[in-house]
Length: 171
Image 1 (cartoon, rainbow, N blue to C red):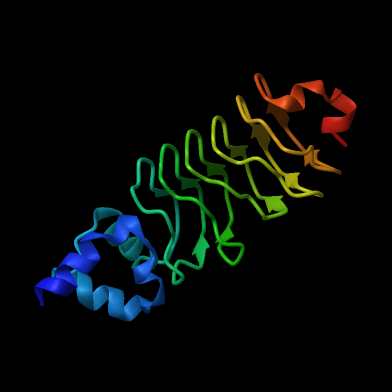
Image 2: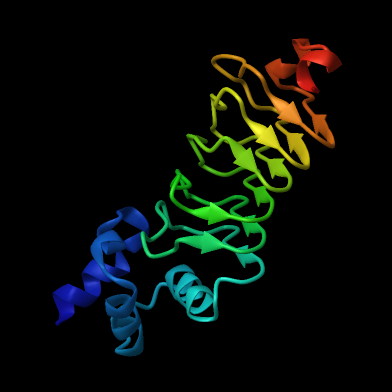
């Protein structure tokens, strides 16, 4: 049993929990085998209907569990170690990932604000639509996304998007 407990104490180092079902995760939490506060927070969020804000700011997790299928509100991953937001994760609100370790952003629609200031993202997808504001302060992109649509405004200081005109950033 001790090896099992040690394995789950290393959750922040890997995605070993990813193949666990929601039910298995719940059992392991109840038994005290999984005691990672961020994973417990996500489990409780899903158990309560995935409604409202999911705040994982400063999380040590690198990966989100595969049973987190929707965030019916805002996702905060500021200053976290989370490297990826799965495309399959439905997010019905803003995404805040300032100073995060987020490396990739593949979704093409954000139903709110997208704040990735000083994150490790180097590319945004073409045809990205942000229904709120886009904030990319201090981000250096490998290439400029084509057909970027921003409905409310943008904050681009210190990023290489500064070279684009207002017309190129707005439709």
